[in-house]
Length: 455
Ligand code: CA
Image (cartoon, rainbow, N blue to C red):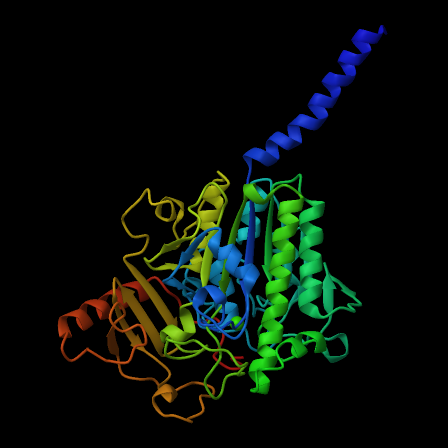
């Protein structure tokens, strides 16, 4: 072969080998979903927090759109995750409560198509790092639900130091001997996933168990917050700071691999901070919201919520209309130009036109909640709610199946803290919201398992 022809073949071969994957990565965005666990509404810098610095999450919020009426459809870990992974109200398929006990069918029903199934079908590499909490049985394992890779734990909570962990950390289905503080380990694995799959289109679900109990923090981080005199708050601050550092490292990995601009990033907490007696209190604050994890008051369901996609979504913006975590999957699929699998029925909607300001209508005229006898309807600025009545009596402990308040109506535009029940003055509004709730309930089924073990 003469030299010019040889050089041409080499160059052409390099062009084919090098160009095709780069082009694919450019045209097919990645998705990174970061979920915090039991984070208080008030406990991030961009939410107004003063005593715990969260510079990396603040920078993420500044790079994108902060949703000021961001909700989760459950005030508990597992129901929220069921809604996230299906894009549906979890009450549609009976995943109303946390999976208590170890029954053979306690987990995200196999009838449901997951976010990972959807992206797998679209040719994506799919990974979960962190907490699963959608079933312990082998048939519910993340790698049976569409995830190519899994590093984390299957249950609802986990110790952060190796010596204090009762359940194993798994890589796939194999137990691994983890030596790092768990939040740092999850960060390490998320960075590794991004570095290994930078040339693929990928979806990574990074589910930190921070800042869920048990309250475990490293000495170095505790020392950093020595000025916080409340011991629980100090430990919470150190745990949250570890997660914020982790988010910084993960975002750096997106930058250093050159995929940041081509990655849709979503961040939210799976429920509000557990602040009421009877929950596993972690030192969080939901101010100015009323209520706690396990209630349908705003403190249980309204959470910090951010979408960031450089060059595609506005930066430093806020979006006021109500949205929920069930919107994440339809939004992510639309961002990637992927078509949902046949027979997919989302309750969530693609938020991109709304977040970009192209659609001035609202994504949801009404949002709904149900957790046993508790329920809520948000319709515009109005909210009708029946909540755990222990909230009405200071010091009362909420356990098991709670007593339920009568229906109460709040105007959230005027009263975000749900302090003034205006149901007596607005009977027609109460009737309207009750009828909307009844109509929504017709599309739900009975819970597949009971309300026990709700932590
Ligand atoms: Ca949680």
